[in-house]
Image 1 (tube, rainbow, N blue to C red):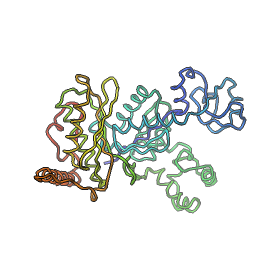
Image 2 (image 1 turned 90 degrees about the horizontal axis):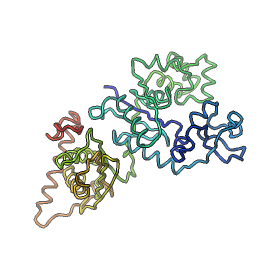
Image 3 (image 1 turned 45 degrees about the horizontal axis):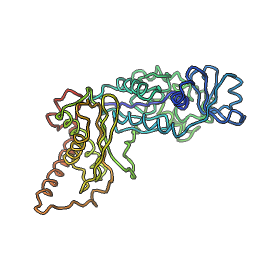
Image 4 (image 1 turned 90 degrees about the vertical axis):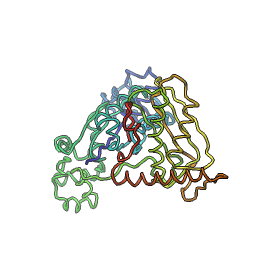
Length: 401
């Protein structure tokens, strides 16, 4: 089965954030750049209205002003860009933990395993576009494909605020007519080399002799040929695939708001399973549990507690998280999202577990630990939905294993 990869690209990101900070900038051509008096300043970003005047990123401000005398230039606010970028990636994380930021305004997402819960790739892409527009106030364009290279080409294909689906059936029709320099890693120098070889489009690269490309461009010639043919198995890196990860967590937005303790328990159980499974995959345990609650009015709260013993056992994480949620949630207020995060991580082999006087607590912990590892083996062999509890299988608010 093909993977489903999304490339999400914020439209005119810096300029969009400036318009968000100062609504008076909407409806006029603006550029983000240096001091207006500085002829050596350059355009860092521009909005759609400035684009219509032919203003380009990286050109000097005085050149931009010649094209558009009414251009408004605003200084960059990098801390705000980072803040908004983090907010957007948090939304992506609600749909998959395979989120790989590519730059401050671009991210790859692997949603292959999220489709049963949130719909197919296009549905997820359209949902993300809608949510980010409504909750953050900027637009994104999304490419949906079976590999990272084509997903990125898809997000560039149509802007702003658009979804483009690139499949094995349509990629030649959509992408092969494009200029070769649209393909990732085709820079000015390599594009000039390709043109001298009579290669002008992505389709020309795909149809060229691979040995000829390698002779002229070295190893990158083979890479470009593979990319043009859709041969790209590079994975989207997990957010937590780093040695210095300080926490591991997961969140879930429900298909309907939940209110009852039974529904909260079901949601908590499913999220705790995902968190604990990932922790075991990374061979770590955590001693700080943090929960997050987002209500139907989008108000968000978080609470945490420190455990006596570090753990990666799903039932322990579930129980501690559930207690935190129930003791801190606003009674009678519908919940839209729950999150669970474990921090203060230690290597599982070095983690100690304090034994109670009578040993019963230790025995229960060991049984649960063995059960989780047994379930991991079954799910790794037969799929993640091979074993699940009844409440997770039968609920009506979108929680699935």
